[in-house]
Length: 114
Image (cartoon, rainbow, N blue to C red; front, side, top):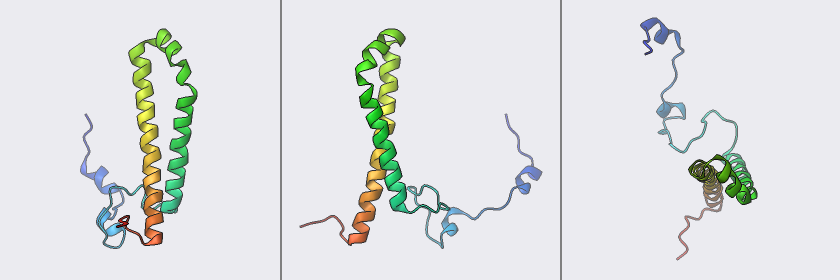
């Protein structure tokens, strides 16, 4: 069990609370790194490409799953594959959502086309 003493807490530099770190704007849960020099578009492109690469890798080995399941156990292999696909899909869609939001912001459309 870790016990922190008062000297340890005081020795750390004081940081601004998230609400004041960006000029009074409340911290957004979707912010990746507020101090990053990458634009939202760059973050979206990187996440989309990385997620797509993970998905392609999963589809490339899908034929080997049966052999791996026989060697290492069905539950373990298919659970690992499910987790891989879930993470890959979430990273891909997070990046795609960022890109779509940036495109909509630049074109001043809200998405309602009635």
